[in-house]
Image (cartoon, rainbow, N blue to C red; front, side):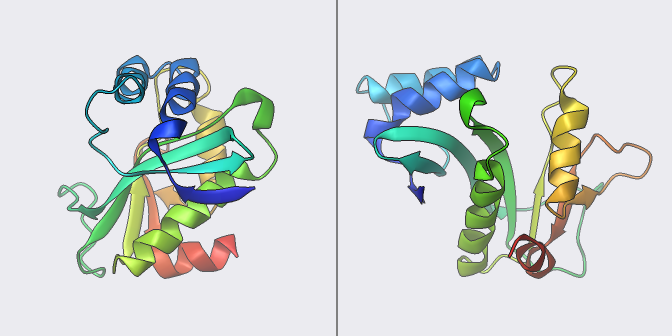
Length: 162
């Protein structure tokens, strides 16, 4: 498995993964780009095997968090994961963890000190997603809402994912 920056040749497969996750708007953005439209607005990375995209992660390395999850002990910039997804037939094989680790490594190169994400809460699988993120070393940042934003200091996350 190879982890790398996404390329236009990946976009249709990325769209298919996102459609399968119920992320129709995000899927459309990649499909439109695959058909010659403008590049997607967020950076993304993929896990590939041969010509097959197994999973993707999309995020930024210049996020500022709102006061609910402000990280005063961690200077800017912060990283934010917008989407992470793996094809259903490739799940439970370490691909999601590898994508999270790769994103964290790229965030460290970009000078980030903290990474956060908000688990997709659109269906009943949110608890499975939360369990996955916790197993990777991310913890809830909102007291009283274990399904809301999760995050971790980047150094701790990378240590946990090694």
